[in-house]
Length: 153
Length: 93
Image (cartoon, rainbow over the protein chains, first blue to last red):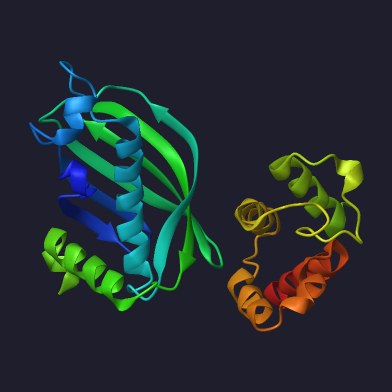
């Protein structure tokens, strides 16, 4: 994870676009500028970044289903529960599954576990829209190939 | 048996916190009831789930982008319900 660059997912471990499921891995860095403010003397990954992490795992799954032809944008976060603190060095397992494949939107259920402990979970809704430009589409493809070499082949 | 309109009105009332009595067939979901596009995604999700369908929201949006004056044809509730009935009929055919 590079928290300050919003690179939350390090590796796609399991992905089934047809079934709408994904499991990813994220390694919390020991140091990050984010920890200087959250919190001084007691570094913790902010809850909003855990939501972003669940959204990115969901997003890569949806992108795979869409064959990177459209982009899912986070539109709605419901029932988000932050159950445990996440400290530097934690290894996170980020899971998401498709709850509903709508027309122009998608809904997922996502959660993070670490060392067998529930960290957080939420329902997420995404608005699915055309990529605003080819640069973003190219960047998403590049990032996906970096974290999921076997899937991108 | 609950009509399509009654079911849709219940969904709108619950998802958008609008009193049920204010939701009538001649109202436009957007211009009369003040529902925005994000709220409508929740409504579309609930409609899809309730009726076991996938309302073609992307197609409607594209058609409306080409002809915005036609908004009543899609989102006046009586017409929205008629379109939902068409999707249900197509699914059951």
